[in-house]
View 1: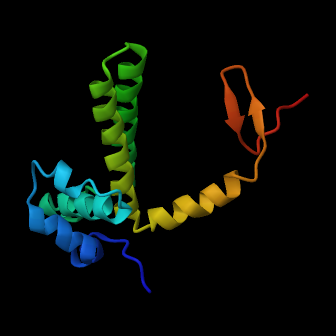
View 2: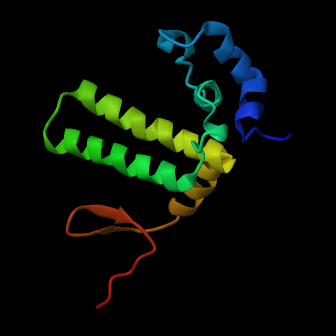
View 3: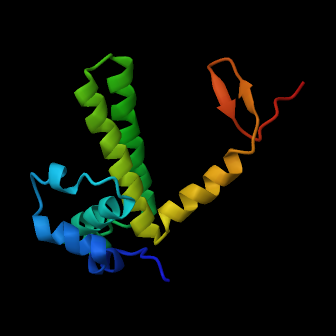
Amino acid sequence: MTRPTDVDQWLNGDAGERVLAVGETDVAEALCDGRFDTMMARTARFHHKHAFGDNNGHDMGYRLTLMIEELGELAAAVTKGKPKADLEEELADVFILTLGNALAMEIDLEKAFHKKMDTIMTRPSRKGRLGIRVTEYVPES
């Protein structure tokens, strides 16, 4: 079975049909089904609606700049002690960009996630100055 990776593949699959059937706004409850493919299809619909692929929206240099911007907004919300609703919104922005990055690079993010989890689940944890780390990095003695 070929798994979808680009915008058109996501929109033409089962999840794309579910997303297209409910409209574009005020559909959070209808689409909050715990399925990764629904989130990817909804992100693909957003990219398609705004023609990201035709307007430099899939350029990874540009997308990484947007990611830095959104991570800064999340960091500011955390460090300023903003309400949970603000944190949710900023974290969602980072997540939506991450899903969009997978579309732009035509990467099967779900599969990549599980492969990476398989790897990091075998790593030891280390306590650093700022907190716990799970990494291959070994500090110099």
